[in-house]
Length: 74
Image 1 (cartoon, rainbow, N blue to C red):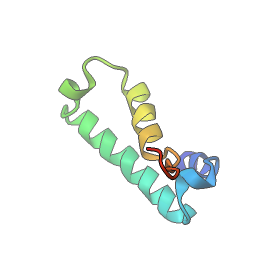
Image 2 (spheres, rainbow, N blue to C red; image 1 turned 30 degrees about the vertical axis):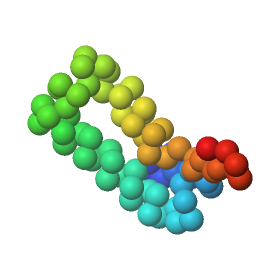
Image 3 (cartoon, one colour; image 1 turned 180 degrees about the horizontal axis):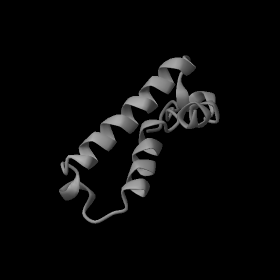
Image 4 (spheres, rainbow, N blue to C red; image 1 turned 120 degrees about the vertical axis):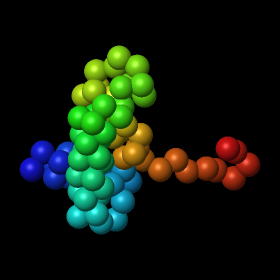
């Protein structure tokens, strides 16, 4: 429910065209992160960061709105 609510609260340009697939992506991200965290495989990568904050940052990277370019600009 929390992931569904989180995905539903995203702007459309952040979640893509398919809410269900965005939910699956969020669920997969959460479970993959948890598995890596619990197995100790993220200890070096997190460098002492709070796992919850790290997960939020990763989620923001994955579900960030697409950047568009304008003619003549980056």
